[in-house]
Amino acid sequence: MRADVVIVGAGPAGIFTALEMLKKGSKQKIIMVEKGQSVENRRCPKHQTNKCMNCKPYCHITTGFSGAGAFSDGKLSLSYEVGGDLPTLIGPDLAQETIRYADEIYLDFGADTHIEGLEHEQERKEIRKRAIQAGLKLVDCPIRHMGTEKAHDIYLGIERYLQEHGVEIFFGCECQNLILEDDICKGIIVSGRHADREIYAKHTVVATGRRGADWLEKLCAEHNIAHAPGTVDIGVRVEVRNEVMEMVNRVLYESKLVGWPRPFKNKVRTFCQNPGGFVSQENYDNDLAVVNGHSYKEFKSNNTNLSILCSHNFSVPFNQPIAYAQKVGELTNMLANGQILVQRFGDILDGKRTWQKELIQSNIRPTLPDAVAGDITAAMPYRAMVNIINFMQAMDHVVPGFASYETLLYSPELKFYSNRVKMDTDFNTSLQGLHCLGDSSGWTRGLMMSSAMGVLMGRKLAEEA
Image: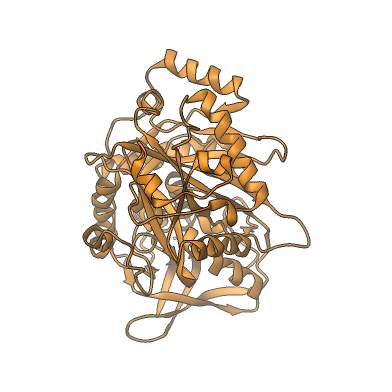
């Protein structure tokens, strides 16, 4: 099988690559391969069973058209300061301009026109003042919230648009390896429902997202694709009552706070805040269960959840950050018998585990009902745990009650980003014909920046037509 462009992965980066090529009038043949299912066939059985069924061969929350982020919450960060390090490669002005362009595309496909975080200037100043007093930085970032259910409709519209305009999408099709000839990437080898096949293309775009970060890391090592050890984020998902977060939710919707707490001064940040949201479970390869969160536009809970992530950057001789984070997750899963672990913040400070009966008596009822009460500190690395505790106590100055005794911490919250692939500003790797995009490339984090990277890739490829 032959194509002009083959795209591995149907997350935002891959989607917007194809979309922009079409918008630029490219007549090149585009094939997209996706391990998971189409939007309309992505279904998590937990809605009926009320517990994770550990679906095989992959989790429908993390895998399929639109990727993992869209099915967790569908928030679009509209500032270049949020979403990874792509601006350091292409420049902040181009990054911001492309974000605005990609945002217009989301609006064209039905995204809500309302933007969170632009109003209540005086109250934003008060929150910023408290953050400064606590030694934290408040990052201004307008948010367009699609919502879990609305994101489904938006990406379904995009999926159908691509197919109607000639993009061939092979679902249930997994990329096994690259086809290389004299350090030139000629295409990919895939396995699918029917048979193994080779797809030859002038350009191969790998955009496998966080779900495929580990796979891409191994691919880089196997084929000597130039890369450098990247960052891995290890943390927890925090859940509090809406009353505690009421002002921040109303004024900012998502509070993006960053700190470098003592004694280690690692970067610690808040991420993916979900007012009235729900804590959720995702499953990766090797039965690794990780925690996430999402929120709907209409259906709300009594709680707000957000993640607190501690960034780890390793130096020589260690170069396996993803494997390190996976081991942390596996140990936590072991303590929870394969599920998500939850503990009250006060119990952590008291040096005791949390018991199920204590959760039942608390003001905060977990929105992940099958989470197992226990002791997070028995698995979390000391450095990360100290960073999280100190950051939460600083957060308590910004949001009084955030670090209360009953505040819930779920573990493990892990964000996998591939070792950063070395590329030029046209996203060319050390292998001719190979390009790496999105979270799997190590350059982006999140829906919008991945979408923007896809837009720029699409423009470059369309120019060659």
